[in-house]
Length: 210
Image 1 (cartoon, rainbow, N blue to C red):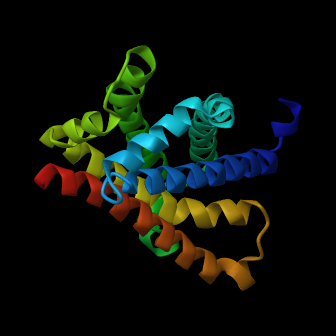
Image 2: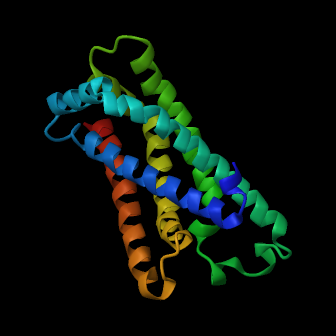
């Protein structure tokens, strides 16, 4: 695409796609919290609404394409940055100039992608290809599997680390004044990262032990 030829445009597109996915993750967490409260009826009603609402159905392919674009652009930008870097981080004491999260964005992102593929195979594919009479029971059954629950928790911890830097980085790519807003963005990013990591992990752990 011609509009994405410049590095600035690529970073802006990366930022916008990332912020769109943050909104999706927070909405997804809100729905998943209904598993605990109010409980089964509310969760099944939410699933039924998403399965039948025309707007949600329209957004599904857009969401999928946004995921693909964000992942592909992230890999491309990482590869470009590495190829242009004349002196590697290992020779420059990276911890002084950057955080662990910022240096490992590509790896936390790829781990989340691996989990997403497994998650889609275990939930979304059965949901789309066969009749699932009890969505609540399907989710709880997955959380009773210790390996799945462990992977689930690790994946959302990785996503939390990814978001802790990604949120701030996205707004900086969009031109937010660093001096005025950087501290607020860092704090907000960490809060969102904690909510996502703790929220999803807590749901999985709760149903594993109950």
